[in-house]
Image (cartoon, rainbow, N blue to C red; front, side, top):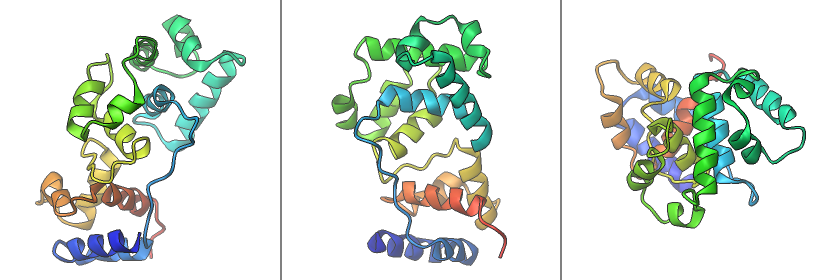
Length: 201
């Protein structure tokens, strides 16, 4: 990853010394590798469950959901369980309904990994957001963390966007700033999440 890190530093140097310092301080970052047996709809469901929540709160809800299945396959459980039961673990009505729509899409063959993986990100986003309740943020998270696309800027992610503003300028459009980091915008997002949780120097 040194080549990608050098490219990020070069792009940052033309934007902001504060941004450059944050990227330099974190050092090279890598897109996480997913387990070979990890199912796409499970990744999507977990993203939906954790949306707009802290990592700790999201983990708690996910653990409750897994416990509630009592060992049954999670997708089948989500698909066949009423929304009220899903809400009892801490999911909102909208999140429960979205997870049921994802499970139904999987059963219908909509979430074929090979087909989706062959698409460019904008086309994949368009395909995934046809599922009820799945928005661009979820599709971006899937693109970064499941398909490991190196060039996604998740502007709908509040933490990434606010951190980029903090390290650059409120007068800059974050999409325009992130464009300077193509084709490695996913790595820029990783750095923004890292910087958001870094201890002050």
